[in-house]
Length: 172
Image 1 (cartoon, helix red, strand yellow):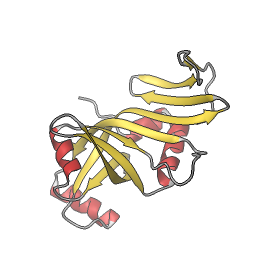
Image 2: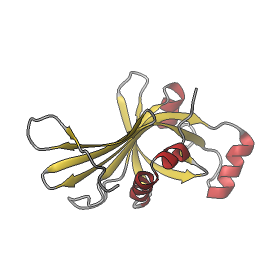
Image 3: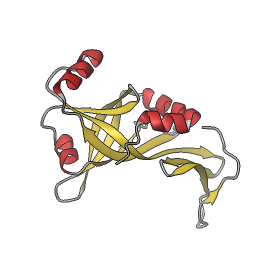
């Protein structure tokens, strides 16, 4: 099975990846959605780290979100909306599958690089979708990338009309 790392995404869409990374860098804490044992969603706070070509999800030992991902690796990660009523840089959502890193030397190396205290759970993201949402005039602007589709820009107005695809790429 092919792994779609952050590096694969960034090579495919460098400007979009830079805008997404910058949005995550605005705040240290974000929201991770996982699936509980009964299939219902769980939303939890999480710090993320992008390094070495991967998007890393680190968790305290035995945390419920880590147990969720060990059982069902599907996740959605949403940027911290920040303070205030507007988000001038939009918001970002990343979906994918979490793959747990269990190799002790690799975990130790990561802990040393990031000064993360042991023990901890560490997952890297196998990306399935990256979406950045901004507002332009009366439209929501959704820029969407998946491993199987090039970057697309969809515009949604505040009416019942379906989203329309923008012809020319807009700013990241």
